[in-house]
Amino acid sequence: MTVVIGVECPLTDDMRALIAELNAALLSLTPPEACFHMSVEDMAGDDTTVFVARNGDGGEMLGCGALLRHPSGVGEVKRMYTRPEARGLGIGGRILARIEALARSEGFTRLVLETGNTYKAAERVYQRAGFRRCGPVLGYSDTPYTAFFEKPLLSNA
Image (cartoon, rainbow, N blue to C red; front, top):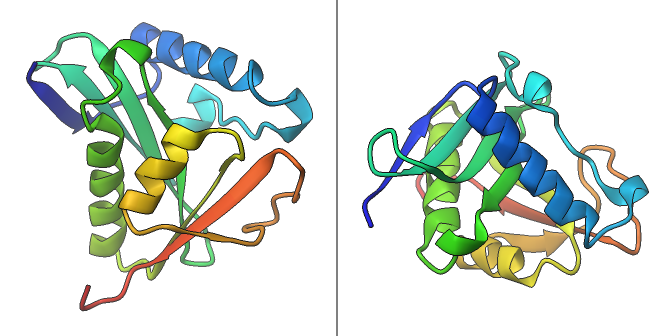
């Protein structure tokens, strides 16, 4: 399978379907009050870049992830998801690498993220990419269902 990752507008029907699938998966594992979902409309803002992995050029969507820029100069990893049939192919890691490369190119010195504490596959992706657990970030509530990660982006790294 040839996987192509590119920047896309989130306001398409296939992206709406992918995000609905992601939301359903998260809500099956985490109570609604501990989910901090970005809508596709939020993802379409100037402060967000959305990466999509497809099977071939223009093929089926396999996964997504986004960089949300905060005024503090911190980049936040959002909406990371790989469809079940595409897991194990390294797609999450490749999307995360694209997010990190963009954040570095824009001068960010730190990436952070909030995720569910039972999402072990996601945690492995983040740890392999050099993220480490940390305390709450960006004003998120520390709940029994959340986990926080950060990665410094040093200029010489």
